[in-house]
Length: 216
Image 1 (cartoon, one colour):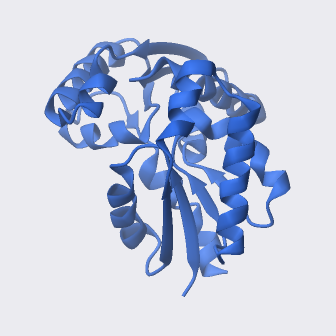
Image 2 (cartoon, rainbow, N blue to C red; image 1 turned 90 degrees about the vertical axis):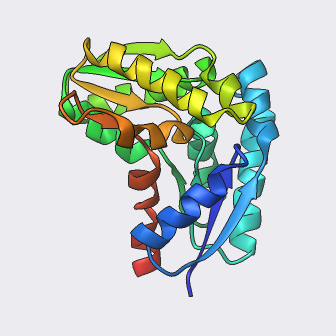
Image 3 (cartoon, rainbow, N blue to C red; image 1 turned 180 degrees about the vertical axis):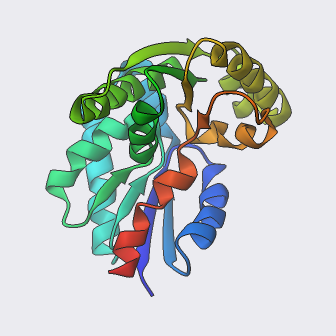
């Protein structure tokens, strides 16, 4: 059985991604690593060289443990995932890459909603790169949802979801497609009206990147 590694910075995400692995990839031996300090340090100090080294070390550990690929599920440290690729003998994926590629082909005005300001920059830069690669015009509009991250951290998931959904409805009126910058926001999508602009989240499309590795 193929083995893959998922590196998380939020304790609640392994269960979410375990279900998605089963649905989207099939039977795999999954190694889930959780390090909340990677996100905490990035929130406080931006992308530190030490954070890149630690993500690289985790990816090396995963490869030594037999993982055929690593998926970094935190968009805030997506840059570290990309930088780790050159140092690790297995593919290292960032979860939001497929979502970004889809977004820049879905409309010129792309909205980015996050619950953490630290996630906006990495998501914005990824969108700009993917738009440039495709020659697609891209006007990015950003918004941080106040209080939502704190609610999630306090275990108030319903309040988190309500705050995110309200900001989605507001920002959707200004854009052609809306991106939810963090994997933890994805479950809100199912509760949104079907007649508004497309709202993209990263977990399901991100985990599909592992199919090629498992199939091979």
